[in-house]
Length: 102
Image (cartoon, rainbow, N blue to C red; front, side, top):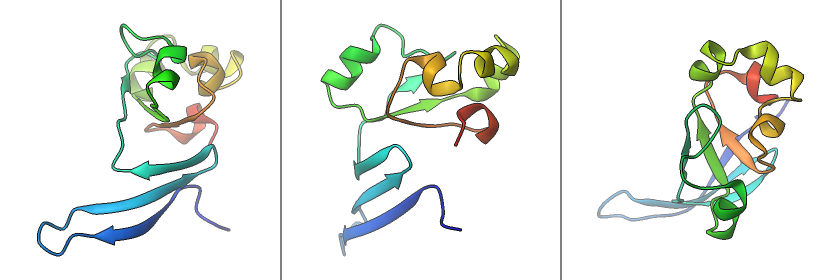
C-alpha cells in the first residue's frame, strides 16, 4: 500500500538546508514551499474558496479538532466529508483522517 501523501525532493540548498520539492496527495501535486491558508472551523476568514483558488492556494490547513467540537463529526460526515463541508475541491491537511475522508 502506498502512502497517501509523499514528498519529492527536487533540490536542497547546501548552505541553508532550504528545500524545493513537490508534495503529492490524492487531490493533486503541489510545489513547495507554498502558501497554505488556515481554515478555522472549515473556513478561511475573509476569503471565499473561489478567491483562494484565484490566488493559487492549493492546500488548506484544517483544524479538525475544532470541527469535532463544533459542529461535530456527524454533521461533517452528513455533508459528504470535509471537502464538501468546506466547499473545497483541492487538498487540505488535518489532524483526523476520519473527518477528512483521506
